[in-house]
Image (cartoon, rainbow, N blue to C red; front, side, top):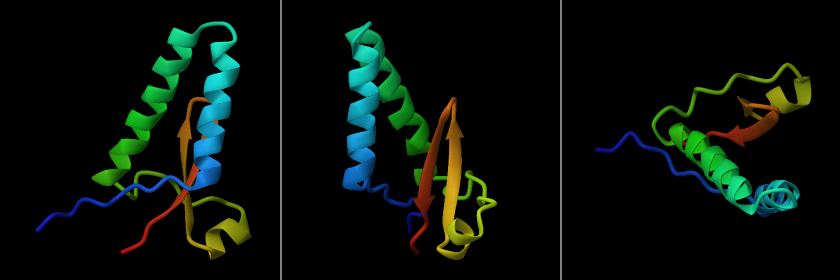
Length: 82
């Protein structure tokens, strides 16, 4: 029995990653790809450790069950579904 979770990017999150890529790629397409891959890898850790992110302070986010993972200057909001 696997204790791994599945990560599903919402369309808005995919759009954010594309925007991050586009912004960095203006200076360095290679660095842009590397950075987006690094973000994806770090988010991938949630497959085995979904409780790694902290519970946000904002009451609405907490109420809806969000968690937040801080990656450099980016915040990754996510929910855990059992």
